[in-house]
Image (cartoon, rainbow, N blue to C red; front, side, top):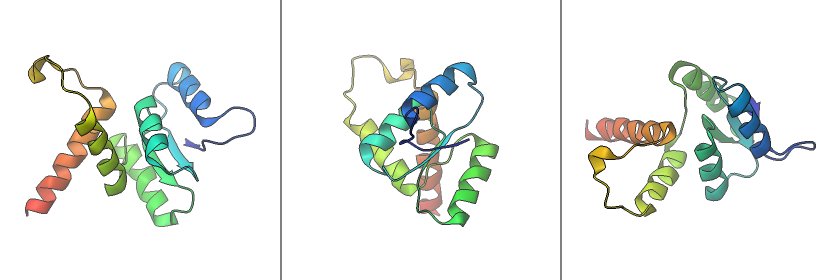
Length: 122
């Protein structure tokens, strides 16, 4: 599903939250003019499978739709960098890293960054 943040009856966050509760298997791609770090982090944490600017080209939108369909998420390099930076700023607790339970979204970001790292090494 393509979803905007600013909508007349219900904002995108409320709509995403309700969809996550009622239809948890639906993958949501956010397309918005609010393409800033705060919104990106908020919506990815809330379960968005992708986050794109409204003015992205059609090829990027089609890539995102196909990738979300096949893999469940799509985060380009900018989104991945923002999320990685957020994770770096997250305070480390005394809990053993091996015991840490990551959210599904955090695991997706880690896998994506690892894939990019592997590609850069070649």
